[in-house]
Image 1 (cartoon, rainbow, N blue to C red):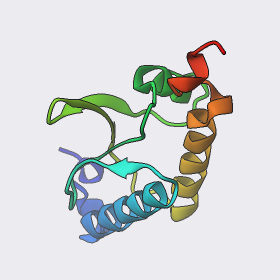
Image 2: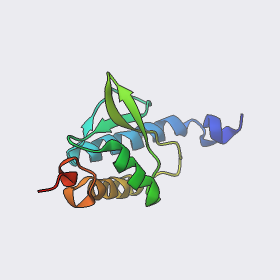
Image 3: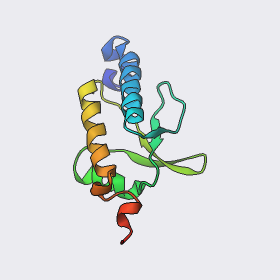
Image 4: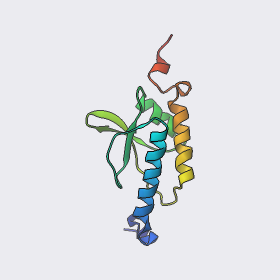
Length: 119
């Protein structure tokens, strides 16, 4: 297995960086009214937002080449699963992604359940 896959190329800093960036993601999501759905250390971050069309939201993220995330089930409820794997990911990257996510998930972004209901 390559050093980049195992993280040993980072001289032990890989897990520390991943944990730090994961915490930045959690903090940014919480500050933006997302709900963290799982306890985590180095595990993927699972989160959701009330009345969000998760499948449509994830499709928009992929179509706009913002980020790839997946849908998962946690305790029987759908959630969004994010796993930061690049050791190059920065705090600025995370904040940009969350900003784009907030736009897509907003009523004007057309991926909330309410936005699809005709008046």
